[in-house]
Structures are given as C-alpha cells and as structure tokens.
Image (cartoon, rainbow, N blue to C red; front, top):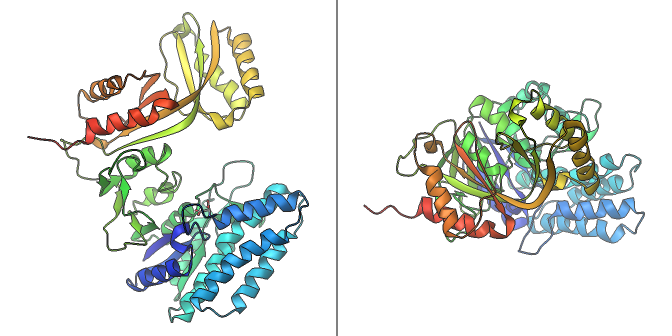
Length: 453
Ligand code: ASP
C-alpha cells in the first residue's frame, strides 16, 4: 500500500490532474491519494486557499462576497469542464461553498478554517469524480471518518485514536481520495493544520494504514542541498535521514512541511519526494538511516530569516541555581516558544521567531527579566537569519566548524551566534539577514564544490 500526496501545483488545473491520474494508474499499490487545494497555475497566480482566506475576511467584514465566491467557484468549474466531469459535481461544490460563506460567524477561527478547508475538501470530491469518469474506481473519504484533532488554542495535531480509526482504510476496495489540511476535534469542530499542512495529512494516513511508502508529489525533481533560488544549480539529494530532513525543513526547506515527518518517522515508513511533472525522476528518499560518505559530511544547508534574540547578562550567572528556568518561564508566560539558547558563563541569548513577539510583549519581558532576575543587561535585537549546516556525517568529522567559520569570514560577515545541536548533525550560525544569501553561497561553495584529487 502506497499513500501519495499531491501538492497544490500538482492539482492546479485539469492538465495537472490528468498527470496525477496517470501516476496513480501506473502503480496499483497507490491506493490512497491525498490532495491539496488547487495551487498556482503560473508564477503570479493565486492559490485557491488564498482566495478562500480573502473571501473569509471579506465575509467577516460584511463586505460583498459574491464576486470573490464566484472566483473560487470558477476555478473549480474550469477544472471540471476541462476534465469533462459531469456538472453535478459543480452544483455540489457551489452549494457547499455557499453554505460555508453564509454560515455562523460568531467563532471567527472556526469560520475561517471552515472556508480554508473547503479548498481541499471540494478538490478531493472533484478528483474522485474525475477518476471514476476515466474508469479508475475511486471514493472520496472525509476526515470525519476518524482524523481526530486536539482542541484550540494549542498547535493542531492528530490525537492517537486517529491512527486506530483510520486503519480501516486498508480495507476499502476503491482508490481513496482524501482531502489534506484539516480534520475534526472530538466534538466535531473543523480545524486546519498550518499552511502547507496537507503533507501532514498524508503522513498521518501513511502511518494509520502502515503503508510501505509515503510519496509526496510536488513540482521539483528532488530536494536540493541548498535553495536553488540563491545557489546556482545546487546538488540534488538522493537519500536523506528523517533527522536531517527535519533539521533542514525547520529552517527554510519549504519542500516538505516540518511537522509532516513525525507520524511516519515513528514507524520507519520511507518517504519519497517526487515531481508530478517528471514522475520517472527518482526523487529524494527520506529514510531512518543512509550510507554516509566521509568525503561529503554535509547533506544540505538551509537558511531562514525572521529571528530575534533576547540577550541577558548577569555577573556570576553560572552560579545561580534556576536562572535559565526562571528566564524561560517568563518567555513561556508570553506564550512564546524559543528555538536556541546559546550561552556563556555570564550571559545567555534566547533565539525566537520574530513573528511571535509584539512590541508590548518585548517591553514586558525586558521589564520582568530586569526586575525579577536582577539581570545587568537585557535587550532584544531583530533582523537575524539562521543558517543551518546539516549532515549525519558531521558527527565524526573534525574541523568542520573551522571550515564553516572561515568560509563565512571570507564574506566579511560577522557571526552573531553559533550553536551546535547535541546530536551533532547540525551546526547553526546566526547572521544579520542582509548577509544571509552571501553566507549561504559561501558555505555551499565550501562544502559542495567538487572534490579534486
Ligand atoms: N492548501 C493549503 C495551503 O496552501 C494546504 C496545503 O496545500 O498543504 O497552505
């Protein structure tokens, strides 16, 4: 049994959906198909999910929604027409969208989620209808069948019973077409995952049916060792471990959602990232272990901007029992999560995603750290990027940090922070965002230039 997930560009129009059908047809093991909402058909096109968010916001402002609603319906209508699917499906989709737009708006989160999810939900119905039109026996299955999520306000995740509930999908005869991106809480309230969350749905289903493989179809041939928009023709990755992929997707490798690995990782189900537009390319395999080449300890380098640091110093900090705990408690009270905490004997920095902090929260934190922890110096700084060098081969490789630091120094950029994870498969450098691309390129050249003997 293979679970395959098709992202937004793979289902953006009729031509793409025909490719999906051919991929599904070409291997009878592909029995569960998870779909995103139609994505971009060309560079500056708008994803259906973004159209829906815009529609939801207009409805909340009591604006005129008919024009925006029609744009969404038209996207589905155009696909259905081009695929030659019976028009009754468009009536179903139109009615569904209308009901959602004119539904109760008292719970704003629920209202917005309900509209956001309609992109995947209706697309799954449409794709299932098309499969049946061409003789592929298929069935739309709703997340109501057992994809159970936790309640707000926590980050969305699937509750353990989900896996038990969805095991039954193994016994369905038809090809299952399942919408990505959302599920329902125990009391039946719809909730979506974060953006890009259809990857997570695919992974949950793969774990629930204990699939032999989870295929994630997108629009690139493979995962690249660095961002191809910054580095020219970066090396493609053939095999990568879950841990390496997790480190890379955490910071800028948008090809795969960073929460999507968890369900399959627990069961050791391999994942392949493949290209809908070039399905014969081998893609990238994500596995528990891989052969490590001693000549290439680094597998990938990622970079992400939008970080802030909270710097705290206090004389004899290292002797003070509970200092770190109290500091992190203040951050927790503001509902902020942190990414790294590099420290010295008398100082500590807490690295945080900037989008979590408001100027008011910043002021409150600084005040409390000064008053409650009697720190000597406390301040926030913004505008940082984290560059992460990742590779299982780094663990047994000496001199790697020195090579990285001298590559960065050749660009004339200052290293604001260095952090090596305890697992030693990643090394993080904090730099000012304006030098991010320069530093990424220098590091790529250092670790990936062909080795000449
Ligand atoms: N359609 C949603 C988004 O654009 C979810 C997904 O495609 O994975 O974020």
